[in-house]
Each structure stands twice: as structure tokens, then as C-alpha cells.
Image (tube, rainbow, N blue to C red; front, side, top):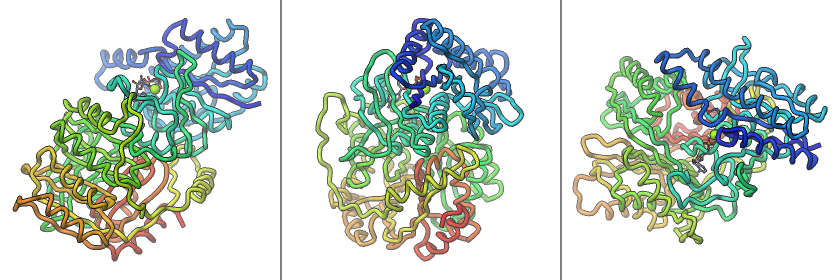
Length: 596
Ligand code: ADP
Ligand code: ASP
Ligand code: MG
């Protein structure tokens, strides 16, 4: 008999009536001939209330006790849900994470799942019961209760669906499905019918709160059919699945993180080992970083900037201080920033998505503090107060509003993107790797490849005013040049630095276009490297597993290879090194990650 997992979020189990409605849905699914596992969150704002209660008692609650406390929210709702099912005349059993056998590591408040036993759930299902699992929780090897991080019930649901080989995992929530952006911020956001695992991974990890990003890692690794659906109606919801919709829209969605901070290490030595030093320390402290940017070194020194969640800023600054104490240089930080990102498979083959995003921001007077890209996303760091305005502007600028139908044409370049392996090979490889993992959430690195067909162009001494990035990238896009990586570092003394990579053959034309775009500004300078080596590590959950970047940088440092540019996403981390180092770097990285 096929198994269906149904997860109900906080709003969907907030009171007795909603609990009964959720129970009815499960009962109907069972009566339609399925075995049903429900995963429930804490009721309404319960988890927030518990967090604030703890904070009234102490400013620094111990993580072990927080887990003991927060896990009670889910325990309450799963018992109530079992009663509601009983009331409808069906058998049900509520189970905590420990009772199911959800084993996690011991990192309290952000534990990762190691394994899940299926015996007890299967026995109950075979006995005709609906299994009601408490989301968000597990136990470590000492049987101490752990939680998976805020929003983690989605991850419980996807993980249970994976181990039970469920036909479908339904995530019932308080919206119609996955939208082009947060419908609470943009009233005209449109529900999407289907979104790929990769896009959803990026959207979720870049701030789209509708799904816990680790649930999408599970779904992708274990081929779980995920559907996000409204709990209050019979709306069809959104399917999250393996294939991108064809033809892929340039931009599928816009995500934002309101509270982001920037840390800059200024005048650190431009030599192998610096990135490694910084990122090993960040990884040891489990601080996820995004938007990593290193300036191309001048006079033997470089500036490194990265962003962290504002809550992690204090810890990140301590890491920065420790790193500069041993390396040299100084640490600066900037709080009160927000990160806005666009995500879409289509941008791999379209020129000008970045240019369009930058020009929308310029038209709305939003200055861009930092830029990073990967194949399917572009992120900008902007002033906190402009976050919602920028999100709305980008959303309507890309015609994502509900009433819009057709997307306007932007140049399509012949996609000369060096692919990893073919999709089918990659899937097969991933499956082999996943089947050998010792912990269900361990990092999956499935491929590492090099590309020496690109050039780097760097523009320095740009005035740091709205519209600069827009002009530059519009010029390049209008010339039909496919830009691969873009980084703009935090401006120093009112001057910004932008580096981009383009096909080597296009570098001459690119610089011509840039010179024209810079007009008569005599300060602006250009430099380029006709051939660079770009190395990419491909896998799943690469940014949220903080050790992947650290291991890459360590490996390159051990081989005396300097890192010139970096870009990160959940599915790929790429670094630029000198072209002549590419073979050495590839061999070393493949050794580190055990990829042949
Ligand atoms: P639950 O309690 O059911 O897990 P969440 O609050 O975690 O619900 O997630 C649903 C909320 O996510 C929505 O109410 C919506 O405001 C927000 N959200 C953010 N980004 C998106 C998006 N792209 N699509 C849909 N909802 C989004
Ligand atoms: N109750 C937890 C939270 O509010 C987990 C969840 O709802 O997914 O974060
Ligand atoms: Mg949620």
C-alpha cells in the first residue's frame, strides 16, 4: 500500500477546529486507500512563546535545555492530533522523535539527522493506524532531545518520506503553495505550479521561509515527491520536483533575508591560505556565510568580504579578529543590511538578467553594496530599509506579478556553459553517493570539474552610486556576451570594484563595451586576465554545510594555490585560480572529496 506523508505547520494546527480539520484530511486519505503518516508542528506561535519565555529567565539559555523546552510544542500537538483522529473513528498513534527513532548529532538547536528507524512506524501503519509524528525533533546518542532548527518540521516530513519511500510528501501550510515571492510582502505575488529542487533549494536558503531548506536537500537526495498545499482549501498547491519547467523562466522567484550583516577583512595578505584560515574558523563555529567576495589583490594585499545572518555577526566578528590577529589586516562590519536574490534556471542561458536586476534597482534609487552570482541566482546586498521596496520593484520588474502573463524577451546566448556530467549520469552518481552516506544529512559532493575557457575582467575606482552596475552589465549584455560570475565588493572610500568572468574569446569586445559604458570618467580602470581556471564542486546543500568551502580552501592552500574569486550556491561552489594551476587544483580537490 502506498504511503503518504502529510505535514501540518503551526497555523494549520493552531486550535481545536484546525486540528480536527487536519485530522479529517488524513482520515480521508487513509480511507482512499493509503497509509498515512502525519507530521505536526507546534500550535500557532507556541515555539515563539517558549523562546520568549526562556529569554525572560535568562539571556543565555543552554542549548540542551532549549531543545528540551521547544520540543514540547510538537509533543502537545501530536497528542491532540491523535485524539482528533480517534474522534473521527480511526486508529492513530502519536510518537515523539525519540519514540520513532530519529537519531541526530548532538548539536542542540540545529541538529542534523543521522538515521531514522522505520520499524515502529511500519508496524503501526500495517496495523491500520495513522502515525502522528512530532516534527522538528530527534535524540542524540545520549538520548538527549535535540531540535533541527526553526522551521525544521518540514525536514522531519521530507526525511520520513525518504526512509518510508512514500509516494508523496504533502506540506500543508497557510498559503496556496510556493509563490514568486513572499505573498505577505508582495500582494501580487503569483503561485507557481512547479519548481525544481535546485531552484527551491536556492530560494529557501536565500530566505523564502515557506520551506526549511534542509527539507529540500532530503527531497533532492532521496527523490521525494514534495507538494506544498493550502491546509484551508483543496487548492492544487506547488509541486517541487526534479526537472525544471521547460522552457525555464529566467526568474522563478525573488527571495530576501531582512537581517543580514557584512564582515570585511581589509588588507589581508593576498596569498594562498588566507581564505582557508578564515573559512575554517567560520566553519568550526558553524556560521553559514554567503556572498563571499575577494578583491583581486593589489600590492600584495586583498580585501575579503562575506555576509552572515545578523544574529551571527558577533560570533563572525570574533572569528574575523582571530583571523586578522594571525594574518594581519583589519576587520570592519556593517549591520542593518538585507539580501535580495533572484533565482531561476533560465538565467543560465540568458544574457542580461543581472543587467536588468541592477537597472531595476537603479531606477528605484537602491544602491548595491555587494553582488554575487551563481548559475541560477543573483544576490545583492542593500540597505535594510530598502528591502521590501527592492523586492517589490524586482518582482514587478521581472513581470512576476499575478496579472502578468508573458515574460519579455531578453537576449538568449548560445549556452556555452561547461556542464558537469549529463543530468542522468549526475543523478546516478548522486544516488550511489547517497546510498553510502553514514549520516542521512552528510554532504553530497558528486562532481568536481574545471573550466579554462573564461577570462576575468576587473573594473576598479567605480563611483559607488546607484546605476553603476546597471550601466556596466547592460553594456555587456547588449553586446550579447554571456557573463558567468559577477562579484562586486563592498566599496572602500566611495569606490566600488566589480569583477566578472566572460568567455576568453569575448574579453576584447567586453573591455571595449565597458570603456564606452564608463564614458568619460578618467578614474575608472580596467584589468583582465585572458585565461583563468574556474573549479566547481557540485553537490547538494553545499552552502548550508559550512565545511565544504572550508575544505576547498584548505586543499587549495595546502597546494599553494591562490584563490581569486569565489561564488557559492547550495548546489555548487566555484573558485577562480590562475589558469596554469587548474590541473593541480583539480587533482587535489578530487582527492579531498573522494570524487574520481
Ligand atoms: P508553516 O507554519 O506552515 O510551516 P511558515 O510560516 O513556515 O508556515 O511558511 C509559510 C509562510 O511562508 C507564508 O505564510 C509566507 O508568508 C511565507 N513565504 C515566504 N516566502 C514565500 C514564498 N516564496 N512562497 C510562499 N510563501 C512564502
Ligand atoms: N515549531 C518549530 C518552529 O516554529 C518547527 C516548525 O514549525 O517547523 O520553528
Ligand atoms: Mg514552516
